[in-house]
Length: 393
Image 1: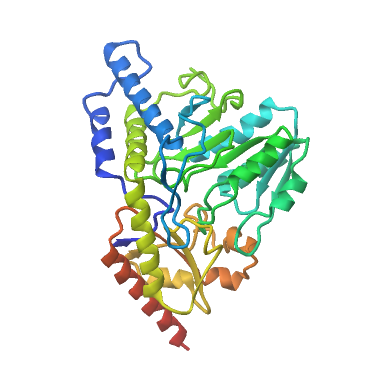
Image 2: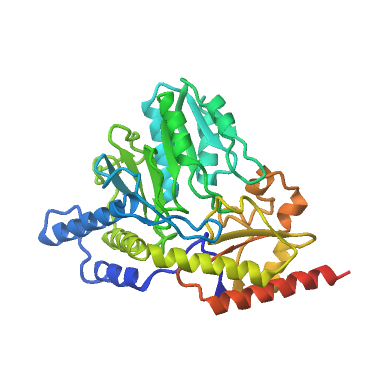
């Protein structure tokens, strides 16, 4: 099988599996136990925490996201080494986002949330839940390229706003949102900024400004079932999970040293391989477009996007049928969290696409372990199958 579904999940890096193995086997102690083995496990978790912080807030210049075929460098503008805040491990980004959203409103007297119509379900569904409890929710629209309307955001954010929640890289179309500008708008009115950085973490610098940042392990060649929330000092949300308060008194539940070590090693590798990964993705992006040829249109901005996410449509294509016809190639119609619903993507509809255009769209995701030859082969087969559909009566 040729795997082109990197936005749904990424292959676990061999180094990550090796880092996890001791904590799955002989070093199985509870990290919250005062025993020698427990303290050793707790120390491993703290090493992982430092590795995540180093990836969230790199001190040195590193490649920016692939934009228009170029790999550039720029100085870091982020918060130094992250010591102005703290990072807490969670079961994944869904928990981190729920915690940030619900916990912020539990601690704030303000009753307004501003977000974007193309956010992940973990944000939009939580926003709907908050709305049912009296919170005003404003869902800002996007233009045809998928970029948030900053003027609309400026109108929406006011002194009643507690939180502005916007993702860095859209999981369905790969578009990069102006996070720093949105954070400035939020702070100008005394509101906090939450950034869903799941699809950007480990691939690009997170812009300066967010007060809360959610990440996930399995999007950066780490294990599933672990992620986390970075919180600027003084912006910590109220706890979502209650119990022993094991994670810095903010989150209850026994941490898994294995999962934490896996996320930490994945974060370390992301920093180490940043330049190589960015160059590889840029080459794959060009190869995919060249191989697919004419007749395909990119959904969302062609410039302000992460190059490892290609969301494309072709007139008259039945995307679901294409997936069925090419079962030896793993790709998707959009978000893995909603692909089984049968409904057209809310992200593509927000771009102004019709239901027919949305259903004629597919998402190709590739990255570190995608080979050039296998990508070319897959794109040729996808192109041939798409043209064959067009010839059918």
